[in-house]
Each structure stands twice: as C-alpha cells, then as structure tokens.
Amino acid sequence: MISPEAIGYGLNMEYKQTGVSEGLLDFVGSRTDNPLKMGKIMNRELVLGLGVARTADIFIRIPEQSTSLLGIKVQVVGDPSKAQASGHKVAFTLAMGAERDSFEGTYDVKLKSDAQDFSIIHGYRPNSWLLLYDSVSLTSYRIQGTVENATPSFNSDEFDYAADNILGLQGGMELGGANFKLKLELAFQRITWSNTETKNYTSFGYALSAGF
Image (tube, rainbow, N blue to C red; front, top):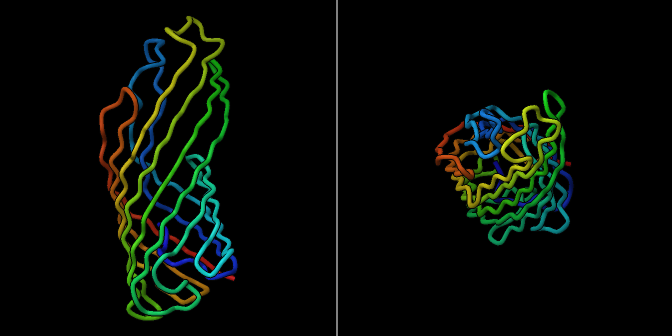
C-alpha cells in the first residue's frame, strides 16, 4: 500500500490495516521440518516516512505480525505528493529488516527473522484529490531458530524456513489532499515457503495518513 509519489520534503505518518498471509511453525510429531500452517490474517501496520529530497523518502514499516522494515523510496517520474500535480507517477522502493524473538512454554523457541522487499509503483493523478495506482513487489523472508528443553527431544533442535521471491500485485486509489489521505487497495500474493505448498491469497486493505 505504497504511493508512487514521494513526500516532497516533510514527514508522513500512516496507519493501515490489510490482509496478509501467515505461516505458523508446526512441531507435530516432534519434528522441526513440517510444512508451515498457512492462513490469512488482518494485520495492522504503522508507517513513518521522511522526505529527505524532493523525490526521495526514507521510511520504516512497523507491522503487528511481521518483521519491521527500513527502506528508501525514489520517485523517477512525476511530481511529489505535496505538488498535487496531475499526470503519471513512477517510483521504486527497497527495504530490509531483521528481528529476534523468543517464546517460552512446553519448550523454548528462539528465532531470527530476515526480510527484504522490492517494489515498483505506477500511478496516475487525474486531479488534485484522486490518485490511482498499481504496483508489483518481490519479497523474501527467512526464519531460523532453535528449540530448547523439549521432552521428548525433537528430530532436530534447529529449524530453517525461507520464502523467496514472493510475488505481490496491488491496485488501489488514494483520496484526499496533501495533508490527509485515505487509501483503498486490492492485493494478490503468491507465496511458497520451504517444505510447504504454494499458496495464493487475495486481500482488501485501507490506510489513513497525515503529512506535515
């Protein structure tokens, strides 16, 4: 849910809620190589963006259910958001992140997650209050970890799952002025995790943003 327009200097804060895929570890049979339990959930996310140049932003995405990402967006066609100028817009983003976590229970789980994301976004603004956009994204995730204090012991005390080149297709609209906006978006995702069959998901999301 990324606009093809850079901020154009300044700060932007966005709250969004959208459907995302979820892969849960499954240690049934005391094994660490079972297929992930796949599903779809609604995820809340906070995005903070800082316009460091007229057509370049740095941003941080802080999702409730996944790895936080730090990234950059560069607009290569069209004017930035604050200009509210009509015409075509094109931008690309690159982001990455890593997190560590631990869980205690019947056994203890320690894990590390890594993520990289790349997207190309195209948009067309027919007037100052409406922006239509579409985008393509490629995302990669890797989850590694250990299982400790398991009784009986597992077949291995380590696990490693990866999902490379997750394909995302998005299309939506942005309504509002330079300072306050509402986004509505439809999205498609095709994802394949290690030892897990390929899954396709569609979702709807919305976002509210304020610029300063």
